[in-house]
Length: 92
Image (tube, rainbow, N blue to C red):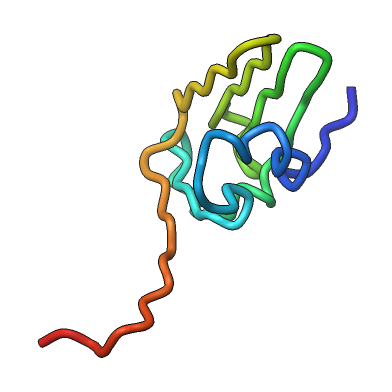
């Protein structure tokens, strides 16, 4: 099976987060690579998606879709960074 890029996750994970998950950065627990989720290799459907590191092929995320719920597992993500937009003045 040929992998897709991480942008394919925009639909399946949109209901899980209040932000665009594909533009977040994550660090691979296997090799330490830091990249946007959109740059990962995704193997998917019909039951869900397996998201692998673009460099070392470690499993970063697993998204399983069912009729009434979604399951998200992040076994290979050391951290996930969500950038926020701050419209106010900079603090001290």
